[in-house]
Length: 137
Image 1 (tube, rainbow, N blue to C red):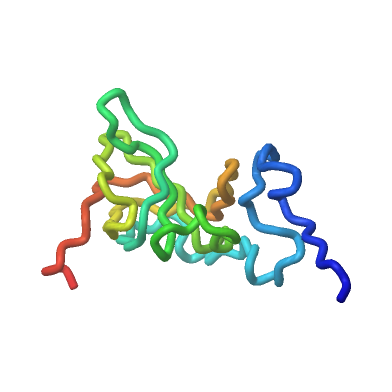
Image 2 (cartoon, rainbow, N blue to C red; image 1 turned 90 degrees about the vertical axis):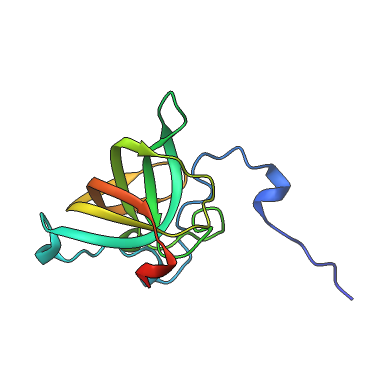
């Protein structure tokens, strides 16, 4: 029986910044940055799950990715850029549980954003961010 070889990042360590980003070998839809121009500049409400990026001195999240399912960007591959929204919320929100869904109200912009975890095709300047309450559903 031939030996199985595993060419994986574990063999070389995880030192490559961006190792969790969208992979080139995936189908194009998995790293699509195609956007909807009609949404640019619209005041909207989005639901999703946070991936914290920046916090203020009180520990409130002021910048985070909003993703369509819990744990996205932690698992490989992350959602495509057109399913990730960069949220900027200077007031900040305490995120005790990244698996708790949020409502984000604000103005959506088509704006490519890239960091070590993932790429986003949209950004939102949030006027309000709150936890989804069971009564909202």
